[in-house]
Length: 151
Image (cartoon, helix red, strand yellow):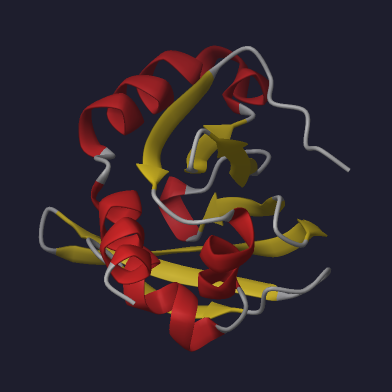
């Protein structure tokens, strides 16, 4: 089942010269996922199974902030979707979503990361989307590509 990405989202992507089957191996355990997704922030937990726990943190202006959620969808070799919301003062009224999508392309795989669901935040959407557009680089997917292509 493919996640529905709403109208307001942040998208980052990378082309990886490997099959979706090979790329997906890096989504199969916490250790493998944290090797690339833990770049730029700290990944404390991510159980890549339906209903699995997701827990991360990032330092913002010298203070560590946690974000947490649940794995909402897993389609092996194709897609992983999870919910995400901040703890404490940064918490939104509803979570947003992260979807990692793998699509066969040419002799490799297009790996896309969508942070979506911002339209659910109502009037807070402008600040939220702008902050993510400015702060979220492609470093995670570049790290994933480096792991896969040097293996």
